[in-house]
Image 1 (tube, helix red, strand yellow):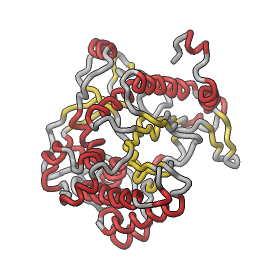
Image 2: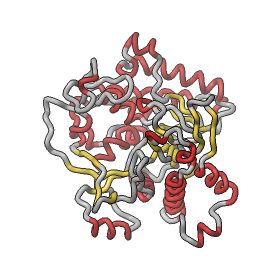
Image 3: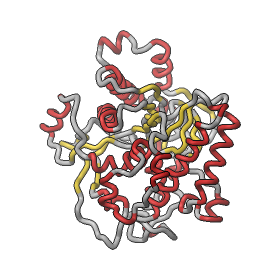
Amino acid sequence: MVTIFHWDTPQDLEDEYGGFLSDRIIKDYTEYANFTFQEYGHKVKHWITFNEPWVFSRAGYDIGKKAPGRCSKYIKEHGELCHAGRSGFETYIVSHNLLLAHADAVEAFRSCEKCKGGKIGIAHSPAWFEPHELSQEEHEEHEKHEEHESPAAHLIDFILGWHLNPTTHGDYPQSMKDHVGHRLPKFTEAQKQKLKNSADFVGINYYTSLFALHDEEHDPLKPSWQSDSLIDWEPRYVDRFSAFNSKPDFARVEVYANGLRSLLKYIKDKYNNPEIIITENGYGEDLGEHDTSLVVALSDEHRKYYIQKHLLSLNQAICEDKINVTGYFLWSLMDNFEWQDGYNARFGLYYVDYKNNLTRHEKKSAQWYSNFLLTGPSESELEHDEL
C-alpha cells in the first residue's frame, strides 16, 4: 500500500504559488500521482492519495503546529511562532484544493490500464469522543453497552466528515456549512459528481479517544477550526486514573481500545458500510532520560498490551458488528522520525539506536506480534483472558 502524499509538498511549489493554498496544486499533484500510477500500477494495487488531511490542513494552516507552520497571532501555543497565515480561512482552502486534487487523481487512477484491479482511498485520522460529563458510574455503565451513538457526532463531522463526506456523498457535512459559513469553499456540481464515491476504501489511523466538551465561548473576530466546531476536548481522570483505561508513564496518549470499535461502527452506520482498512494503529512512547536504555526500551509490555487490546476490539468489530474491515497496519515497524517531535517519540516494534549506527533491536512487542501473526493467541493468553 503506497501513500502518494504524506505532507511533503515540494519547496519549489511552496515558493512559487503557496502549495495547497493555490488551486494550481491540483494539476501538479494529479500529474505527480499519475506518474506514480504509470510507474508502479502493475505492482502496487492499493493506494492512498492523502495521509491524514485533517491534520495536514489544521495543524499546518490553522494552529501552526506542523509545516508549513501558518496561523494567526491569536492562536494559543503557536500563534507567536507563526510568521504568516490566516486561521479559520486557510485550513478550509487547503482541504478544498486537496479534495479536488484527490478527485482528479482518482479519475486518472481509474483510467490507468496498469492499475486495473487496484483500489484507492484516503487515510483519515479521527479519534473517538465520549461526553465530557461522564461520571465513574456512567463510565462503568457505558462499558456494559456494546452499541451506542456518538456523543460528539458534530465534532466527528469536523474531523472525519470534512473529507469523508465529500468523497462519499460529494459535499461537505451540513454541520460544517452551517458553522463555517462563507469561509467554507463551495464545490461546483461537476466537482461534486467527481468527488462522489471517489474512494474504494476508507483508511483509518486510530490511536486514542478523548472527552468532548461543548464550547460556545468564541470570538467571531478570531475564527479558527477549533471555534467553528464548537467543541473542545481533553483527557479526563477519575480518582487519579484515566476515565478511559490507562495512560502509562511514558505513553503519548490514553489507551482506549473500545474507541476503535465505536468509531468503526459509526463509519459503518453513517457511510453505507464501506470497506475499511486500518492504515495506522500503534503505541508511542517518550522515554525521556531512559531513551538510551535498552533494558527499558525493549521491555515494552505496554505496547504489547496496547496491540492485544486493539486487535480484540477489531475482532469484535468484524465478527460481532459485521464491519467490513479488510486490512490492518501496525504503526510502526521501527522507531522513526515523527515530524515536529523528531526522534524523541518511539512507536516502533524495533528499537533504533540512533547513536550507534542505527542498529535495530527487537522489542518484546515485536516478539509477541510476530508469533501472533504465525500462530494466533497462545493457550495461556486465552486461559488467562490476557486479550
